[in-house]
Length: 390
Image 1 (cartoon, rainbow, N blue to C red):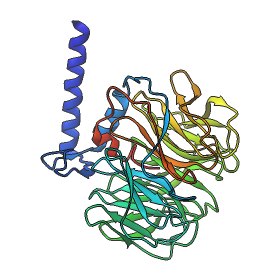
Image 2: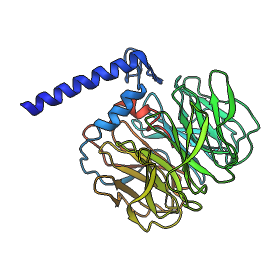
Image 3: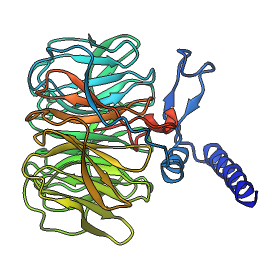
Image 4: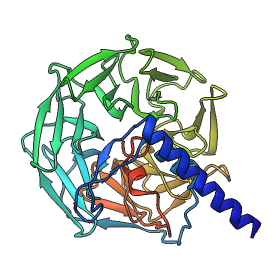
Protein backbone atom coordinates (compact mmCIF):
# COMPACT_ATOMS: atom_id res chain seq x y z
CA UNK A 1 0.00 0.00 0.00
CA UNK A 2 2.84 2.39 0.91
CA UNK A 3 4.59 1.60 -2.40
CA UNK A 4 1.36 2.28 -4.34
CA UNK A 5 0.91 5.60 -2.53
CA UNK A 6 4.48 6.58 -3.37
CA UNK A 7 3.92 5.79 -7.06
CA UNK A 8 0.70 7.85 -7.10
CA UNK A 9 2.39 10.81 -5.38
CA UNK A 10 5.33 10.68 -7.82
CA UNK A 11 2.94 10.56 -10.78
CA UNK A 12 1.08 13.61 -9.48
CA UNK A 13 4.37 15.45 -8.92
CA UNK A 14 5.52 14.61 -12.45
CA UNK A 15 2.26 15.91 -13.91
CA UNK A 16 2.61 19.10 -11.85
CA UNK A 17 6.21 19.73 -12.92
CA UNK A 18 5.33 19.13 -16.57
CA UNK A 19 2.34 21.46 -16.38
CA UNK A 20 4.43 24.22 -14.79
CA UNK A 21 7.12 23.86 -17.43
CA UNK A 22 4.57 24.03 -20.25
CA UNK A 23 3.10 27.19 -18.75
CA UNK A 24 6.36 29.09 -18.28
CA UNK A 25 8.88 27.49 -20.65
CA UNK A 26 7.04 26.07 -23.63
CA UNK A 27 8.82 23.84 -26.10
CA UNK A 28 5.57 23.05 -27.85
CA UNK A 29 6.45 21.41 -31.11
CA UNK A 30 3.69 19.50 -32.81
CA UNK A 31 0.03 20.10 -33.55
CA UNK A 32 -2.15 17.04 -33.85
CA UNK A 33 -5.18 17.34 -36.12
CA UNK A 34 -8.63 15.86 -35.82
CA UNK A 35 -7.59 12.60 -37.43
CA UNK A 36 -8.20 10.05 -34.70
CA UNK A 37 -4.98 10.82 -32.86
CA UNK A 38 -6.35 13.92 -31.16
CA UNK A 39 -9.92 15.20 -31.23
CA UNK A 40 -9.25 18.70 -29.96
CA UNK A 41 -6.23 20.07 -31.86
CA UNK A 42 -4.20 19.77 -28.68
CA UNK A 43 -0.55 20.79 -28.73
CA UNK A 44 1.73 18.11 -27.28
CA UNK A 45 5.37 17.18 -26.74
CA UNK A 46 6.96 20.03 -24.88
CA UNK A 47 10.61 19.48 -24.16
CA UNK A 48 10.39 18.56 -20.48
CA UNK A 49 7.40 16.25 -20.94
CA UNK A 50 9.28 14.29 -23.60
CA UNK A 51 12.47 14.04 -21.57
CA UNK A 52 10.64 12.92 -18.43
CA UNK A 53 8.74 10.30 -20.43
CA UNK A 54 12.07 8.92 -21.66
CA UNK A 55 13.77 9.13 -18.26
CA UNK A 56 11.07 7.69 -16.02
CA UNK A 57 8.89 5.60 -18.31
CA UNK A 58 11.39 3.46 -20.24
CA UNK A 59 9.90 0.37 -18.67
CA UNK A 60 7.64 -1.18 -21.27
CA UNK A 61 7.26 -4.93 -21.22
CA UNK A 62 8.68 -6.68 -24.29
CA UNK A 63 6.06 -9.25 -25.27
CA UNK A 64 8.61 -11.32 -27.14
CA UNK A 65 7.98 -10.86 -30.87
CA UNK A 66 11.55 -11.27 -32.05
CA UNK A 67 11.15 -11.13 -35.85
CA UNK A 68 12.13 -8.84 -38.71
CA UNK A 69 9.44 -8.74 -41.40
CA UNK A 70 9.04 -7.16 -44.85
CA UNK A 71 6.18 -4.64 -44.91
CA UNK A 72 4.58 -2.28 -47.40
CA UNK A 73 5.29 -2.19 -51.11
CA UNK A 74 8.38 -3.83 -52.62
CA UNK A 75 10.47 -2.88 -55.64
CA UNK A 76 11.70 0.43 -54.25
CA UNK A 77 15.10 0.07 -55.92
CA UNK A 78 18.66 0.64 -54.70
CA UNK A 79 19.96 3.65 -52.84
CA UNK A 80 16.35 4.63 -52.30
CA UNK A 81 16.03 6.35 -48.91
CA UNK A 82 18.22 7.68 -46.10
CA UNK A 83 16.25 8.10 -42.90
CA UNK A 84 12.60 8.43 -41.98
CA UNK A 85 10.37 10.78 -39.96
CA UNK A 86 7.25 9.95 -37.95
CA UNK A 87 4.38 12.21 -39.05
CA UNK A 88 1.54 13.61 -36.96
CA UNK A 89 -0.86 10.97 -38.33
CA UNK A 90 1.37 8.04 -37.32
CA UNK A 91 2.63 7.37 -40.84
CA UNK A 92 6.34 7.57 -41.72
CA UNK A 93 7.91 9.79 -44.36
CA UNK A 94 10.84 8.08 -46.13
CA UNK A 95 13.54 10.60 -47.05
CA UNK A 96 14.68 10.19 -50.68
CA UNK A 97 18.37 9.64 -51.35
CA UNK A 98 18.31 8.32 -54.93
CA UNK A 99 14.57 7.68 -55.21
CA UNK A 100 13.76 11.13 -56.57
CA UNK A 101 10.57 11.47 -54.53
CA UNK A 102 9.35 11.11 -50.95
CA UNK A 103 7.35 8.02 -50.00
CA UNK A 104 5.07 7.41 -47.03
CA UNK A 105 4.72 4.11 -45.18
CA UNK A 106 1.26 3.61 -43.66
CA UNK A 107 1.45 1.03 -40.85
CA UNK A 108 -2.35 0.60 -40.76
CA UNK A 109 -2.87 0.02 -44.49
CA UNK A 110 0.60 -1.57 -44.80
CA UNK A 111 1.37 0.40 -47.95
CA UNK A 112 4.32 2.46 -49.20
CA UNK A 113 3.18 5.28 -51.48
CA UNK A 114 4.89 8.06 -53.45
CA UNK A 115 3.98 11.54 -52.21
CA UNK A 116 4.88 15.14 -52.98
CA UNK A 117 6.92 16.37 -55.90
CA UNK A 118 8.98 14.01 -58.08
CA UNK A 119 12.25 14.64 -59.92
CA UNK A 120 14.36 15.44 -56.86
CA UNK A 121 17.45 13.81 -58.37
CA UNK A 122 20.21 11.53 -57.08
CA UNK A 123 22.07 11.75 -53.77
CA UNK A 124 19.52 14.35 -52.78
CA UNK A 125 18.83 14.15 -49.03
CA UNK A 126 20.10 12.40 -45.92
CA UNK A 127 17.78 12.61 -42.92
CA UNK A 128 14.71 14.65 -42.09
CA UNK A 129 13.22 16.65 -39.22
CA UNK A 130 9.59 17.19 -38.20
CA UNK A 131 8.91 20.93 -37.92
CA UNK A 132 6.49 22.62 -35.52
CA UNK A 133 3.86 23.04 -38.24
CA UNK A 134 3.84 19.33 -39.14
CA UNK A 135 5.92 19.71 -42.29
CA UNK A 136 9.17 17.76 -42.70
CA UNK A 137 12.48 19.41 -43.49
CA UNK A 138 14.58 17.26 -45.82
CA UNK A 139 18.29 17.64 -45.02
CA UNK A 140 20.30 18.29 -48.22
CA UNK A 141 23.16 15.91 -48.94
CA UNK A 142 23.95 16.89 -52.54
CA UNK A 143 20.72 18.71 -53.39
CA UNK A 144 22.26 22.07 -52.54
CA UNK A 145 19.20 23.33 -50.69
CA UNK A 146 16.74 22.25 -48.00
CA UNK A 147 13.30 21.11 -49.09
CA UNK A 148 10.10 20.84 -47.05
CA UNK A 149 7.44 18.18 -47.48
CA UNK A 150 3.94 19.39 -46.63
CA UNK A 151 1.64 16.42 -45.87
CA UNK A 152 -1.49 18.58 -46.10
CA UNK A 153 -0.74 20.12 -49.50
CA UNK A 154 1.19 17.00 -50.61
CA UNK A 155 4.03 19.12 -52.00
CA UNK A 156 7.82 19.10 -51.71
CA UNK A 157 9.21 22.63 -51.99
CA UNK A 158 12.67 24.23 -51.91
CA UNK A 159 13.18 26.38 -48.80
CA UNK A 160 15.96 28.46 -47.30
CA UNK A 161 19.22 29.40 -48.96
CA UNK A 162 20.48 27.63 -52.08
CA UNK A 163 24.05 26.85 -53.16
CA UNK A 164 24.97 24.64 -50.20
CA UNK A 165 27.09 22.35 -52.38
CA UNK A 166 27.52 18.59 -52.68
CA UNK A 167 27.88 16.05 -49.83
CA UNK A 168 27.01 18.87 -47.44
CA UNK A 169 24.99 17.48 -44.52
CA UNK A 170 23.95 14.15 -43.04
CA UNK A 171 21.22 14.46 -40.44
CA UNK A 172 19.38 17.27 -38.70
CA UNK A 173 18.08 18.14 -35.22
CA UNK A 174 15.15 20.32 -34.16
CA UNK A 175 16.34 22.98 -31.71
CA UNK A 176 14.42 24.50 -28.80
CA UNK A 177 13.57 27.64 -30.79
CA UNK A 178 12.03 25.67 -33.67
CA UNK A 179 15.03 26.08 -35.98
CA UNK A 180 16.83 23.03 -37.38
CA UNK A 181 20.53 22.28 -37.00
CA UNK A 182 22.02 20.71 -40.13
CA UNK A 183 24.83 18.29 -39.25
CA UNK A 184 27.92 18.89 -41.43
CA UNK A 185 29.26 15.94 -43.39
CA UNK A 186 31.59 17.72 -45.80
CA UNK A 187 30.27 21.27 -45.40
CA UNK A 188 32.88 22.09 -42.75
CA UNK A 189 30.45 23.93 -40.46
CA UNK A 190 27.01 23.56 -38.92
CA UNK A 191 24.14 25.44 -40.54
CA UNK A 192 20.73 26.36 -39.13
CA UNK A 193 17.51 26.47 -41.11
CA UNK A 194 15.06 29.06 -39.79
CA UNK A 195 11.50 28.26 -40.95
CA UNK A 196 10.22 31.70 -39.96
CA UNK A 197 12.85 33.72 -41.81
CA UNK A 198 13.20 30.98 -44.46
CA UNK A 199 17.01 31.20 -44.30
CA UNK A 200 19.87 28.71 -43.97
CA UNK A 201 22.80 30.24 -42.07
CA UNK A 202 26.26 29.08 -40.96
CA UNK A 203 26.62 28.82 -37.17
CA UNK A 204 29.27 27.79 -34.66
CA UNK A 205 32.87 26.96 -35.47
CA UNK A 206 34.10 26.33 -39.01
CA UNK A 207 36.91 24.17 -40.43
CA UNK A 208 35.63 20.67 -39.72
CA UNK A 209 36.83 19.21 -43.01
CA UNK A 210 35.34 16.40 -45.07
CA UNK A 211 33.28 13.44 -43.80
CA UNK A 212 33.12 14.93 -40.30
CA UNK A 213 29.81 13.88 -38.74
CA UNK A 214 26.75 11.71 -39.39
CA UNK A 215 23.75 12.54 -37.24
CA UNK A 216 23.20 14.62 -34.14
CA UNK A 217 21.45 14.08 -30.82
CA UNK A 218 19.44 16.67 -28.88
CA UNK A 219 20.50 16.46 -25.25
CA UNK A 220 18.36 17.45 -22.28
CA UNK A 221 20.19 20.80 -21.86
CA UNK A 222 19.21 21.85 -25.40
CA UNK A 223 22.71 21.37 -26.84
CA UNK A 224 23.33 18.99 -29.74
CA UNK A 225 25.94 16.23 -29.80
CA UNK A 226 27.48 15.80 -33.25
CA UNK A 227 28.30 12.13 -33.90
CA UNK A 228 31.81 11.70 -35.35
CA UNK A 229 32.12 9.81 -38.63
CA UNK A 230 35.69 10.70 -39.55
CA UNK A 231 36.23 13.68 -37.23
CA UNK A 232 37.78 11.46 -34.54
CA UNK A 233 35.93 13.08 -31.63
CA UNK A 234 32.45 14.17 -30.58
CA UNK A 235 31.57 17.85 -30.77
CA UNK A 236 28.74 19.78 -29.10
CA UNK A 237 26.87 22.65 -30.71
CA UNK A 238 25.59 25.18 -28.16
CA UNK A 239 22.78 27.27 -29.73
CA UNK A 240 22.92 29.86 -26.94
CA UNK A 241 26.67 30.51 -27.10
CA UNK A 242 26.77 29.73 -30.85
CA UNK A 243 29.84 27.55 -30.41
CA UNK A 244 30.88 24.09 -31.56
CA UNK A 245 33.26 22.47 -29.08
CA UNK A 246 35.18 19.18 -28.93
CA UNK A 247 34.07 16.96 -26.04
CA UNK A 248 34.85 13.53 -24.64
CA UNK A 249 37.64 11.26 -25.79
CA UNK A 250 39.55 11.80 -29.04
CA UNK A 251 41.28 9.40 -31.44
CA UNK A 252 38.32 7.51 -32.89
CA UNK A 253 39.72 7.44 -36.41
CA UNK A 254 37.79 7.41 -39.68
CA UNK A 255 34.33 5.99 -40.47
CA UNK A 256 33.72 5.44 -36.76
CA UNK A 257 30.05 6.11 -36.02
CA UNK A 258 26.83 6.84 -37.91
CA UNK A 259 24.04 8.24 -35.76
CA UNK A 260 23.41 8.43 -32.04
CA UNK A 261 20.62 7.77 -29.53
CA UNK A 262 19.72 9.58 -26.30
CA UNK A 263 19.56 7.06 -23.45
CA UNK A 264 17.19 7.39 -20.52
CA UNK A 265 20.04 8.42 -18.19
CA UNK A 266 20.94 11.41 -20.37
CA UNK A 267 24.00 9.79 -21.95
CA UNK A 268 24.28 9.30 -25.72
CA UNK A 269 24.92 5.99 -27.46
CA UNK A 270 27.13 6.30 -30.55
CA UNK A 271 26.11 3.80 -33.23
CA UNK A 272 29.13 1.97 -34.71
CA UNK A 273 29.66 2.17 -38.46
CA UNK A 274 33.19 0.80 -38.72
CA UNK A 275 34.31 1.29 -35.11
CA UNK A 276 33.36 -2.30 -34.26
CA UNK A 277 31.71 -1.46 -30.96
CA UNK A 278 29.18 0.94 -29.42
CA UNK A 279 30.46 3.87 -27.38
CA UNK A 280 28.66 6.08 -24.88
CA UNK A 281 29.22 9.80 -24.41
CA UNK A 282 28.62 10.99 -20.84
CA UNK A 283 27.96 14.76 -20.78
CA UNK A 284 28.46 14.96 -17.00
CA UNK A 285 31.82 13.17 -16.87
CA UNK A 286 32.75 14.41 -20.39
CA UNK A 287 33.96 10.95 -21.38
CA UNK A 288 33.37 8.65 -24.35
CA UNK A 289 33.58 4.98 -23.36
CA UNK A 290 33.33 1.64 -25.19
CA UNK A 291 30.29 -0.41 -24.14
CA UNK A 292 28.65 -3.70 -25.03
CA UNK A 293 30.05 -6.35 -27.33
CA UNK A 294 32.95 -5.71 -29.74
CA UNK A 295 33.84 -7.16 -33.15
CA UNK A 296 31.06 -5.81 -35.39
CA UNK A 297 33.26 -5.19 -38.40
CA UNK A 298 33.02 -2.52 -41.09
CA UNK A 299 29.90 -0.60 -42.25
CA UNK A 300 27.83 -2.37 -39.60
CA UNK A 301 25.01 0.00 -38.61
CA UNK A 302 23.55 3.40 -39.56
CA UNK A 303 21.16 4.82 -37.01
CA UNK A 304 19.58 3.51 -33.85
CA UNK A 305 16.20 3.65 -32.10
CA UNK A 306 15.45 3.92 -28.39
CA UNK A 307 12.78 1.37 -27.52
CA UNK A 308 10.30 1.46 -24.67
CA UNK A 309 12.36 -0.84 -22.43
CA UNK A 310 15.35 1.55 -22.55
CA UNK A 311 17.32 -0.66 -24.93
CA UNK A 312 18.51 0.57 -28.34
CA UNK A 313 17.89 -1.15 -31.65
CA UNK A 314 20.89 -0.78 -33.99
CA UNK A 315 19.77 -0.50 -37.63
CA UNK A 316 21.80 -2.86 -39.86
CA UNK A 317 23.57 -1.45 -42.90
CA UNK A 318 26.05 -4.23 -43.74
CA UNK A 319 25.59 -6.31 -40.60
CA UNK A 320 22.72 -8.36 -42.02
CA UNK A 321 20.75 -8.43 -38.79
CA UNK A 322 19.43 -6.05 -36.13
CA UNK A 323 21.25 -5.86 -32.81
CA UNK A 324 20.08 -4.53 -29.45
CA UNK A 325 22.25 -2.67 -26.97
CA UNK A 326 21.15 -3.19 -23.37
CA UNK A 327 22.58 -0.41 -21.13
CA UNK A 328 21.74 -2.31 -17.92
CA UNK A 329 23.37 -5.60 -18.88
CA UNK A 330 26.00 -3.78 -21.03
CA UNK A 331 25.51 -6.26 -23.87
CA UNK A 332 24.91 -5.99 -27.61
CA UNK A 333 22.89 -8.95 -28.91
CA UNK A 334 21.63 -10.08 -32.34
CA UNK A 335 17.82 -10.02 -32.59
CA UNK A 336 15.19 -10.70 -35.22
CA UNK A 337 15.74 -12.35 -38.56
CA UNK A 338 19.20 -12.67 -40.10
CA UNK A 339 20.30 -12.58 -43.73
CA UNK A 340 19.11 -9.04 -44.46
CA UNK A 341 22.00 -8.41 -46.83
CA UNK A 342 24.49 -5.61 -47.41
CA UNK A 343 23.78 -1.85 -47.49
CA UNK A 344 20.26 -2.76 -46.48
CA UNK A 345 18.91 0.09 -44.32
CA UNK A 346 19.67 3.64 -43.20
CA UNK A 347 17.84 4.72 -40.07
CA UNK A 348 14.79 3.49 -38.21
CA UNK A 349 11.56 4.91 -36.77
CA UNK A 350 9.68 3.76 -33.67
CA UNK A 351 6.01 3.30 -34.59
CA UNK A 352 3.00 3.86 -32.32
CA UNK A 353 2.52 0.10 -31.88
CA UNK A 354 6.10 -0.41 -30.65
CA UNK A 355 7.50 -1.87 -33.86
CA UNK A 356 10.58 -0.28 -35.42
CA UNK A 357 10.42 0.58 -39.11
CA UNK A 358 13.74 -0.02 -40.90
CA UNK A 359 14.19 2.48 -43.76
CA UNK A 360 15.39 0.75 -46.96
CA UNK A 361 18.54 1.95 -48.69
CA UNK A 362 19.36 -1.00 -50.99
CA UNK A 363 16.86 -3.46 -49.52
CA UNK A 364 14.05 -2.46 -51.88
CA UNK A 365 11.34 -2.66 -49.23
CA UNK A 366 10.62 -1.48 -45.69
CA UNK A 367 11.03 -3.96 -42.86
CA UNK A 368 9.85 -3.84 -39.26
CA UNK A 369 11.57 -5.24 -36.21
CA UNK A 370 8.64 -6.69 -34.30
CA UNK A 371 9.48 -6.43 -30.63
CA UNK A 372 6.20 -4.86 -29.50
CA UNK A 373 5.66 -3.52 -26.00
CA UNK A 374 2.60 -3.62 -23.80
CA UNK A 375 3.00 0.15 -23.35
CA UNK A 376 4.88 2.46 -25.69
CA UNK A 377 6.09 6.02 -25.13
CA UNK A 378 3.40 8.67 -25.46
CA UNK A 379 2.75 9.71 -29.05
CA UNK A 380 4.03 13.20 -28.24
CA UNK A 381 7.36 11.75 -27.13
CA UNK A 382 7.56 9.62 -30.27
CA UNK A 383 7.20 12.85 -32.27
CA UNK A 384 9.69 14.79 -30.14
CA UNK A 385 13.10 15.99 -31.28
CA UNK A 386 14.73 13.52 -28.91
CA UNK A 387 13.50 10.46 -30.80
CA UNK A 388 12.10 11.52 -34.19
CA UNK A 389 15.21 11.82 -36.37
CA UNK A 390 17.86 9.80 -38.18
